[in-house]
Image 1 (cartoon, rainbow, N blue to C red):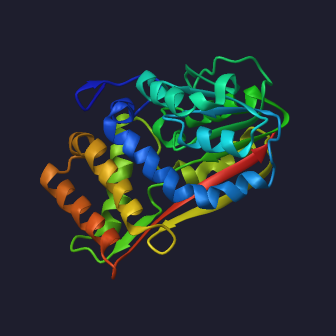
Image 2: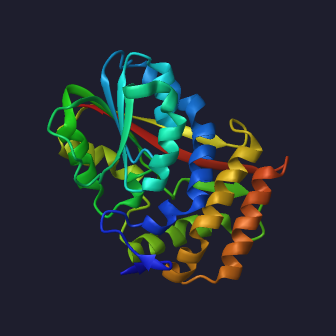
Image 3: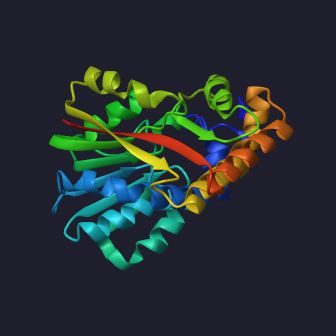
Length: 276
């Protein structure tokens, strides 16, 4: 199977998009939008001097924030994209040997069992071909009592108004069609309780990161959608059977809505936590 203009990585249903330069912008804007609500979740169970694994760390937007927040903790970040890891190493060079980054597959983490006190996995699990396997790997490398922190996107939890075309129809219809074509689950966020329960995880909880135009600067929200547009339009057109012209119009309307002082846009992002 191919995706966009290149082959699909067997462990990443969105490999082409993950490697695109738009993903760097996307990760930065998403961190800017979500971190103020996400940081208090980490405060509930401070990692202290423990060991942290960031699965799908990307450019280390959150690894860097966590290393600043927990100056006695050690960190490992893994990602399939070496170019993202190069950016991560530059960003986190100031932390010295306390942080290291390596190429790693979330479906087969290159670590022995029970190695980490906290495993973070953000904005990844909706993009893989086997989400239950990723969660099983997270559980495997956690120490007894260790905690998982997983942002599991769900593309049925977005809407905006006003737009000329039906934005609800776009988000309800197109993501499942695209996901079926590339082999991932863009509604995984709502399924996480069952998946974590199946792994016998304890203290399962969910918090919704409310990314909307009341809590997040309008330009930040718009930049997220601009990055999605730039990185995914071609694949959506090819895989979901929608014209590039319609995709362009829909994203233009939604981005304009996010920036319009009279408009309202919302992306609810499920953040699941659990203890091994």
